[in-house]
Length: 436
Ligand code: LLP
Image 1 (tube, protein in one colour):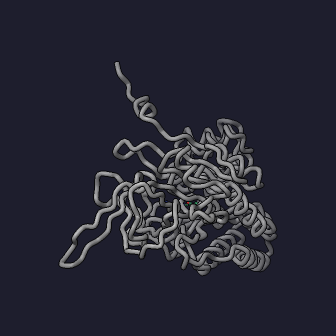
Image 2 (cartoon, rainbow, N blue to C red; image 1 turned 90 degrees about the vertical axis):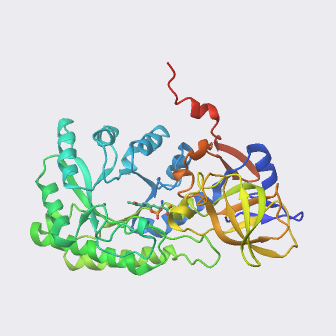
Image 3 (cartoon, protein in one colour; image 1 turned 180 degrees about the vertical axis):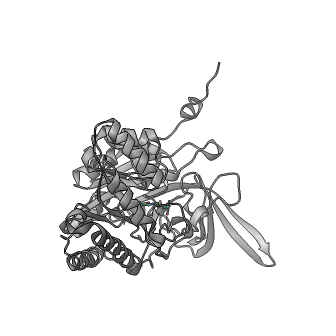
């Protein structure tokens, strides 16, 4: 995070708040969100992409009512992909006209909720959804603004589970075989849907500009086909080209995120050039970053519980450091072989660094948070460690495995801390039980 410093005693302070004080006040595991880091990344996105269009924060990365208010105050729009995310955003007072709804299998209730709330637009993902939404809008006497999500056939260089635009996956309408063009025709033929643009999302945690550029070219290629079939005047209503999220962040010191100003300029240039070539006005460039806004400014604090040197061969041992959380608050290592940086933060150690494996407290050996890292040889029970860049897809993918309680989330700003989400309690879990 931007505001982490080690003070003269060797303890780390996050936006001026000492980690021991945080751990003692709120317990561990603890997500610590640096508010000004989050807000400044929102502002950086708006500065980069604002001149060409707009930025939607992808709330799947991490959402709470307070996050929705920060995003609103920083002037961004919001992407939601479920009724739950939509409800949290609306109850937080997020302006519905700046919300977009995603999802490959939105329920009738979710579509109806979005229409009734008056969301800005809905991103269509299947033929059956076109008919479904048309009927729902018609029954309400509405015309709903929609985008068509296009699968552009780009192989994003990232983990298979988080790439979304190669052909063999569940999202969107394929460009290949004319499926996407067919979807455009069907939307045009409805009475209650207005096609306002095209959408593409190629994947997540991407460090390579080529995939984004190729996606932009291919989406514009479809726009050209639409012009050829329906003419410039009709096509001009497709004023939004949304190129999704996916900007990679630095989890390890050697990771090298794309400079967002350059990304914005190059994508805008493609849009400007290719739309002009077919006589269309320059479309609005929309993007949907989640990780790049929420990820870097949050750390998870854990207390070390045990340190065990396990013999794994002749004269060979591996150090296992057990922390008081694990795959229930960070499943990303298990699921995507994600890598994280971890530091001893409660004190400075002069001891030699030894290769260590950081594991959680759950009942399976796959419960690994960091597969290999360097930690001081004198690391001991009671020490506090921090895992960096856990703001995206950790809390939002958390689980209650082994009846773990979800950690608390606090925000730090100007040397003070505030609780954003309280820790779950056993009463929360028991409250789901129906006893007769
Ligand atoms: N837009 C759409 C349509 C998406 O599907 C996603 C992410 C985003 C935007 C935001 O992408 P971002 O800027 O955060 O990369 N759980 C995985 C990531 C799944 C991403 C799903 N969609 C992980 O922990 O890496």
